[in-house]
Image (cartoon, rainbow over all chains, first blue to last red; front, side):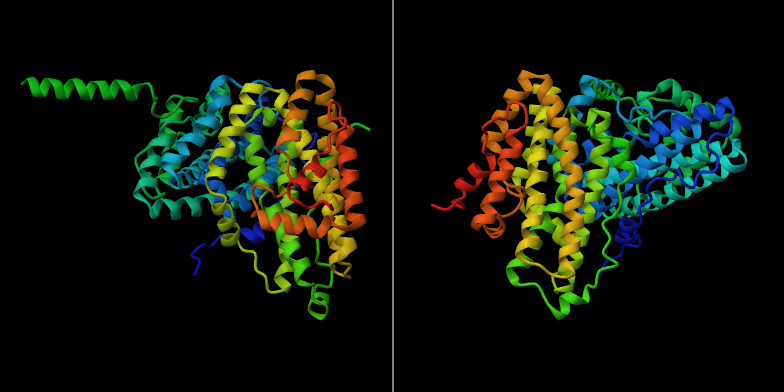
Amino acid sequence: MSTEVFDVLAYSADARGSHRAELTGIGRPLPDGLRSELRYLRSRLSGTTGWLSLVLVTPTHKNARITAFLSGWAYERYWLADALDALTADPAAPAVPARLGLRTRFAPLAEAVVANVHGSALTAVHMAERAVDGVFVEALLGHAIGQASGPVAADLERLRGVLLRQHSFFTEEAGRLLASSARARRLSRRRLSARAWPIGAGDDVSGTAAALTALGAADPQWAEQADARIALLPGLAGLGLARRSAANPGRPALRTPLRPVAALGRLAASAVRRKD
Amino acid sequence: MAFDIDTFAGDSVAIGWGDLDLDAFRRDPLPERTLRTLRYMCDVEFHTVCYLRDMLVTPSHTDGDVSTFMTIWNREEYWHGEALAAVLGVHGITVEFDQVKANRMKVGWKDRLDPIKQSLLGNIVGKDFIAVHMSWGAANERSAAAGYRRLIALAPHPALTPLLKRIAQQETRHIAFYTTQARKRLEASGRARAITRFALSRFWGPVGSGVMPEDEVDHVMGHLFSGEDGLREVHKLDEQIAQLPGLEGLTIMRDAFARRGLLPA
């Protein structure tokens, strides 16, 4: 008997398309700060194909329930980004960069190879990534709503409803997968610490810095609260992803160049102990 | 007329069947052969996410229009799968997530190697590889639409026929995108024409081959494209593909059928 609560079939039938007909805030003037924040959010909401390119080359693509959700999720994200384009009067910004760096171009290939090592534990990582990202996006959107007024605030609240539904899937799925596998928990801790937040933050370091700085100025407790939410996911307590992101926006919480240094340090320490 | 991706996205709607009398299937159930073909089509529609994967690992997804198209297309193909699953469900054939997952597991090592192969090729060939994908997609979508048309002709039914017509109609929008993109990219690059011609002539197979069991591919293609009318469709598909720049004279559908022994002697 299935223990899942989120009804993917119902979600798939009901995934939200264009919001333009319902937006009442189009054309309303926006404070500069709010416009920038919404454009930053727009970039975070779009670009799903980049993340999917890394996910679908792993065993996650075999999980038909998850891929059914993701087809609706990517569709909804497209239209959420479009809604923000409408509100910020921004002709649609490119969803993907015109040119990918070498690392990004070969990332799916590397992930496809690595997937053969980690197997289905990667699915937990993917769900946890989106659950964590959802915490950041909600905090940013909540701040934007606080800065908006009237019809724009109402529009953003409606969009938040769509995002909350998506987030509930990822949180539930991540919770279940992490709870069932110590390997998934270890891998997720490592992977989540090795990336910048929210997803895509590394592509726009200055934008991330501005967004998180504004968020922190309005709510100094946001990072602590976000980390507390993330800590509720099995095995993810104590990562401090939000705190570290606030301190060093656009950079991974744990910078990978430190790992070889740490390993060398351990090797040196063990050599010294043997000598003693 | 230029393909308008914004109109394509904006006009995308779920295939509906709530207005169709599915009880008609209880009064007049579909024959076994038709159900077998429908099951194949349903599985292939649900398998779209794997085709999407193979495109995402290449430069294809870096193009804004292609990226938008893939998002909407993946969603529409999923709706097709749901619609066909509803028909199968009335006949006592349940297509659930676990079964779809089991089908994907059965593909085995090929499934693990395909994205690696696609990514390597895509990165070695570069942006010209998008022309391969678009041309391949055009061929796949044309053969899928033809398959639906043939099934409408072979198995007329008051509930099935309108549903298949709706799916086929949505497939024509996919054909329009792939064909427009393929034409543009093939016209622009001799290298793209050469690589695409090589890839299609050597490796293309009927939609579903490579992921469905071989005997199912043979059964469905034999079911849909046999007889004079079926063969006429096969020839027509080849003529349409051969109209793309650099693909003159190709007969990928006939060649694929010949390899499978599906052409009359």
